[in-house]
Image (cartoon, rainbow, N blue to C red; front, side, top):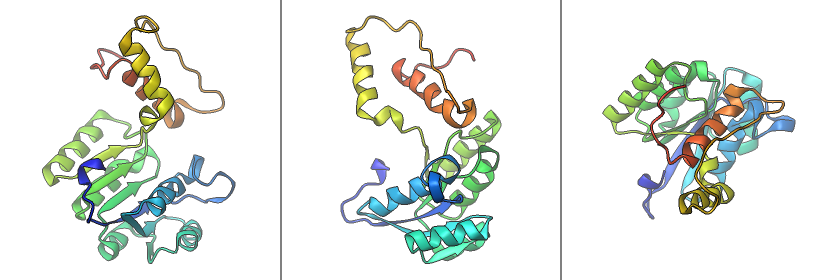
Length: 199
């Protein structure tokens, strides 16, 4: 959220979709904890709330982060917490409903897990609503900002390893939708984010 940066501004955030926590906290089905950790560790963001359909998951998340606003009903949470930033950490099928609710609630930014949506019509609708409301919409493809990947891109740009011909990727033990989307994003990143001609 660099465009929101200002040294004296402080933001509040909520997480939608906590997950069960436990052994795989911060990934798998508990990606909300990775978002929670990011907010907790940021000096100008305070995690103030969470929403999950599972009351037990919600209680565990509340206790872990000591957040004041929690609810199993999204509208109630958004009305009570009035967050600047909303994290959407659920499966892709629910993203459009949740992202649009966050935008309409007055959030300044929405940080959405990948994959962003299952249909291009949903993606276009979310983007249009965000633009109409002046909301920053971010999809969680962060690997392109990690040092090793930045270095590979620079080597490609400099011609140090020759022209890019083909990129192959494998995803052992993971599925294309939840994990493979990162590698699709990296393929575009290494290719200079050129427009996609076909899939």
